[in-house]
Length: 173
Ligand SMILES: [Zn+2]
Ligand SMILES: [Zn+2]
Image (cartoon, rainbow, N blue to C red):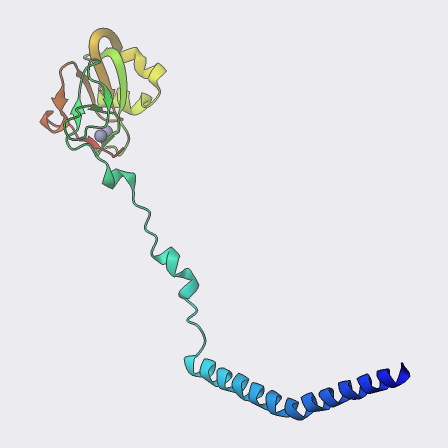
């Protein structure tokens, strides 16, 4: 039994020494490979520092306002559904924006502006509907539109650009 173990140990020692003999060679070749790799990496140089930020530079969030404006912006009375005009679908634009005061246009269905509604009144009370209400008279079928500088009472469907002097445009949906 003991002899067997000795034989086994001898065998193990032999195989170990065989590994040792080969080992320096292996290590050398391995180290050469590593050095070669290092040289290669040195030749390539460090990775460009701006690389990680590239995706952010290429991200240009598209504004909804430029992609989905009404083909033609319309104003209308209460019979005209508010929404986004597209192709054959005609809607009263509910995203009107004023180029004069750079504010969005508010609408009140079933009301008309009194003749005394002026720039000063709108400037003071826009966009507080409860205060604007002071110059709104109930009127069947009409829709009252206002920004901070202009107002209109609309009954019939009308193109925005057909309304003289009106600075409203579709701001995008
Ligand atoms: Zn629109
Ligand atoms: Zn305005």
